[in-house]
Image 1 (cartoon, one colour):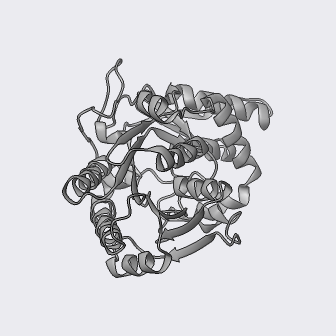
Image 2 (spheres, one colour):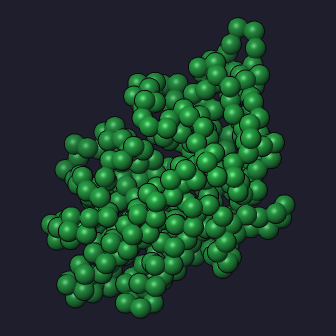
Length: 347
């Protein structure tokens, strides 16, 4: 099987690329190499004869048509997206252009290719989305595949729109699609503007560790390599037209998460007289900050036999160790635009 992965130099996309190569699949990595991409993320597989790279933008339809014609993929795994909520607050236009218009271009290029090849029944267009499209939960309840959409940020609204486009292309044109909505990912190669790497790197640098509001917002945390395995399982076993929610079954408040990271750092790289937790600082909350996300993974577990293998404590330990061992990787990214700054305050 040959898989065309969009956004394969990003955080989740690169995990999918590495996992797919390890499983014996051929991979074409299509990436525009925007600020959050890094080809070092796929360096371990870049010399494989099963790997190819295409530097292209999903907003460029002509480039997409060429890539489909040249590489003849069996599956598309569409991960390319603008994904940082704070950046979407400051500049929503990029999110509309990439997440909505880019997904439209991908769907049309895939449909044209599928039709030109006599609509093979084993072709799949797998769209990877987020649980943020469902909005915010209270203290109880979980998101299912039937939860109504209620996006609250420009980012989640753009992803909700792309989900709707994918469903429409299935219902209208018969394109064999799959949709997955995942909870918060973390792990190796996480770009250093997101919460967990910010906590680790600020702690190591002796800087304040910022927590929005009171730190009581709750997220379900999914180790990225577990997520990559789940995505490939959906490609292999999922039913066209079906959506699957993928969660880590690891709910934690942001404060609990940060405190756990500080304890791990206290053990792995102890300070002389203090705890890294002393650097925790509460800052003004993000505008429109969703209170709680939680995934009900019943469908993916019962229908496809998948469930996460890594607890959040195990995953955080692995993640902290990875950042301690890979300083050259994250230092090279810290000079990129917006990294280390508080974004999302223009609302």
